[in-house]
Image (cartoon, helix red, strand yellow):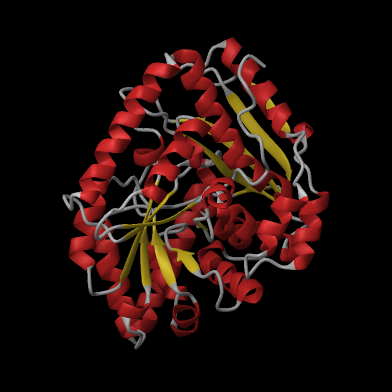
Length: 407
């Protein structure tokens, strides 16, 4: 490796990987998935040296193991079970699951294949490695860090002075961070700052949450709804949310309950998010589409269920900055519990444009899977015919529900 190891602990992943991982271990340990990397920036190219460095960094990551101290930390989280801790004690990343090459327009192709238990855990460290390798080998890293710290201090000052008021928020930037050093600086400074009416409550990075004594934040990602709902070939994928919510409640009951709404559109999600799930889940997360329209829709839905929206959390996490979060907070303040997960704006804001890279589930149990968000452009499916099939299933479900409602 030309760079120092980028991932140095298996805790250095997002909290929702452990949330989902435990449920996968207990209920879907035989599921197999394929994950595919994509760079959405059209003007970015990874050189051969970068690709080789990424390979070596991933090999180093695959040599890591959980320490007993790290497992003790996870064991203190009230919804983590001893059986999952014992599994993690034995678990290791498997380099043979990775296929890393240059067969892509951006010069870098990555796919992982294997059990969902394994491949789910690779997404976040892989993206963090790709980001840091690119910025360290493409730009003057020291200059980037100077601009990063300057902008970070300016952001913190705007919260402290009350220019922006956003209530509770967490840092969600691990997958697209400038570097481990940058993310650590951001979490450390935010945790120590007096932010006035705003409150920094935690980070998705479990390693940094442990290091700085803040809350590790994260529940479920789109992969959960996609694989649980579409990975069983007997399921109608238009009911993906029902299968996913049902399995989540089976694992966690009333604990660890923030439901993601837009895996196959929020409108379809609401067909399954009825009184039982509305009661058991503490809140919902927004990740695509107009946040104001989404929040109004969720508040109306809670009222229709006879539930008080003021007792439920609306968590916003889609491409946020403090200005946008402040506008959302002002709109909904006092009408529901409002929280934010803010990623790239905190963890990779420099004088250089950040990467827009993703690694998505593209197959489960030998069958294509897809995400149909509330806006176009956030999904990734290798098979247009399957995506069309999923869209037709959703339309059939929505039309059926409307016909029943109008009877």
